[in-house]
Length: 433
Length: 143
Image (cartoon, rainbow over all chains, first blue to last red):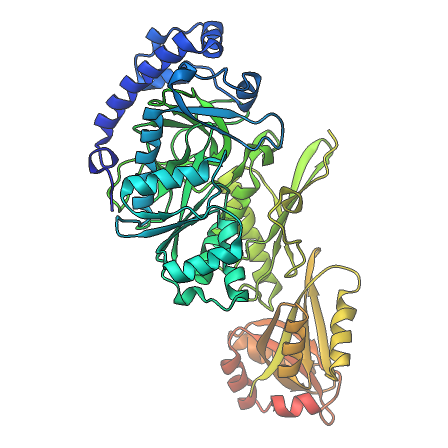
């Protein structure tokens, strides 16, 4: 179901004219009310009046997490505290937390966007939503909660933790929609199994999972174990919280960005150059309706690409690919930016290849060399050496085509590569620079 | 008429081959013939054993990538030109040999060669018509 037909299916031209108007208003407002932005814009020699078309956004300076930390706690707020009705904060495990505020209108916008997101993920007024995102400073719990109420569904504010009680509630209240982090959903599945409760007997139809990156393989696992259709939701507190983008359950192929509230760009994280649609890079978001905490060209550090093709669900909003990594994981090989996730996507496209791989980066005679070890699967194994070599060759060619770098592919025995989601296991960088 | 061979993917790492032979020994599987094809980074071990099903199972359980392949065991006269005459028959019939290796035991006075053909049925026809004996799987495994 499309919650807001008018906006979500708006022709691109009309959408872009709304974006420009809202961008101009936001830029004028942050220039007038947030010292940080005024200083940055002045340094760049840009006045709000210079924003004449959407492309002029590219002339504005980026905002990074460090900027938010330096203005801790409320320095980036664009309204007086009188008008702030809610404060959220990130966990701050790697430094000072980042603090964000919302006006009453911001809360309403957020609820609208979450209602859209829940509807795109399969929820309707008649559904019961088991909301296992944490309630508190984290935006997940309350974000889903307000959206569910806006949509008119029944929300169970179960929050995170106390897993056994959650299983009892899932059995007794028969919720039809699950909202949780993907990893917690699998934890719920295990706990239910231990308690003798089968997800096959529960009433879930859809699950809306986010707040951490997850792969297509994890989607398969969740859908099988939880017996529901799983979609991805994206957001970050610096920009809004959940609801920035959502996968529609019809296509499950990219997350529609709420472009009437945010402008998305993809940049090369090193050169900071804006990349055309389809190219992979860092997602940069600008909020164009937020009052208390607007962000201009916020560098998310999340790696994705944008797809403007029309979607079968009818929404006209651009789709971002599932987040495939963080800029922190990026490698520069012979001057080319390489994300381990890109290697993974090449492997996933080849029939019979297991997505288990390891990149070994070395420097020989001042030249970077990359060896990609790929586990051989039962399906692709041949008793003929030349067939196996052809397979290596094909992977090498596909990587060369996508990334523009030559790598050496070596087939490896099954289970010989360590199983871990972390960067450490995927990449061994032996270069001494 | 075809016989079964077990192929195993091996990385070029010290001790991998002995791991395979160790597993087969522990499970009382007897190796009848063996050949390794290798590149700089991996190899394919080809085995003829007395119990294919068991060998495949225990190696898979141990985490190896294993595949059963059909091969043809051919009797070759144990004299100069014995192998040559067979290869010539195949060549004239347009049949390609993907690879071949020798079997340890003899069949009477003849040597036995294991062949992997691109067209095994045609190869068997050509060889049989020319009076060459094909050793069937059941006999081969216990020879």
